[in-house]
Image 1 (cartoon, one colour):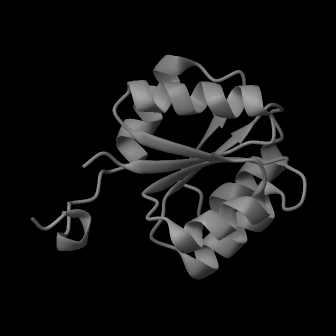
Image 2 (tube, rainbow, N blue to C red; image 1 turned 45 degrees about the vertical axis):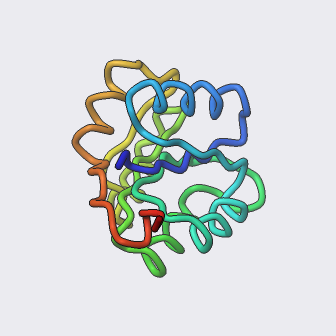
Length: 131
């Protein structure tokens, strides 16, 4: 069963590009436009990993990361940022992010980081349809 990745970015072009790329790489990707929307999805979907933009409206990436660590600490997070803001990245790594990507995102780097951070979960009885 492919890992289900939640992509959070307020730039829809970037979110859709990442979704398409992740789907091409064999993941199942879902997008959200802000941290509040993403947190709601975490309550209803089984998510195996998150690509999280640092700067978003409604709830920024660092605030969402704190909520993820409090409520879903088993879900690995890779932060994304367009600016090399070392303070934000250090803070994200200290708060539990597993890694980070700088925008524009290099497809090769995306593939390598996702393959090491996002491990597919094993199928469970609940994932199967009974005949």
